[in-house]
Every structure is written in C-alpha cells, then in structure tokens.
Length: 82
Image 1 (cartoon, rainbow, N blue to C red):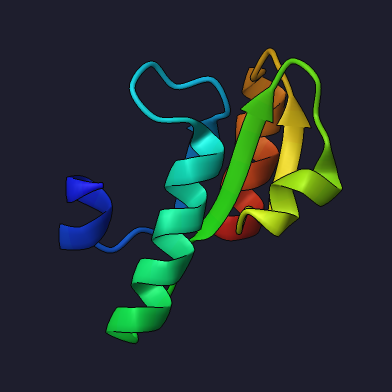
Image 2 (tube, rainbow, N blue to C red):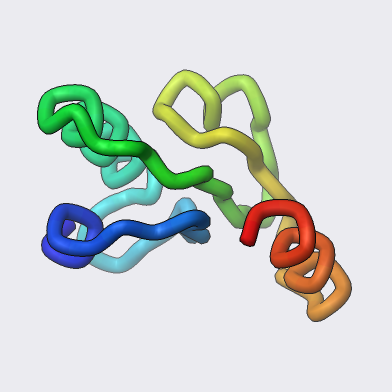
C-alpha cells in the first residue's frame, strides 16, 4: 500500500494469495485510493491458480491471468501496457 500510494506505475501485477493481505483487498483499496486522491490508476492484473475474471473485476482488477507467469506473457504485457 505504501508503494502504491507514493509512486506512479503503468502496470501493477498482483498475486491473489498475498501473505499479509489478499490481492482482492489490495486492488480494492488501490481503486478507492486513486478515486479519492484523483490520481491516474495503473492497469491492475491479477495472477492466480484459478482465475475468475468477473470476481477480479469486481475488486478493481482489469484482468486476471492463470499462474504460472511466463516470460511470453510478460513480454506481451510489456508491449501492450508499458
């Protein structure tokens, strides 16, 4: 949360199963934070073993991809979003 509130990013990759806070909770907080502070929100992408695109979108994620994260996917995302 500290990094997301003090820096600007073009793309945020979140694992759904983070150790302290779920990726869902973090994405929801980030969406609300950007709206409240009137700052440009980065594209938020979730990684999970069992992707549920609609559920991810409900929590403020733009897309949800299955694990594992491959180099090919990183390359596609970098070309598309950065």
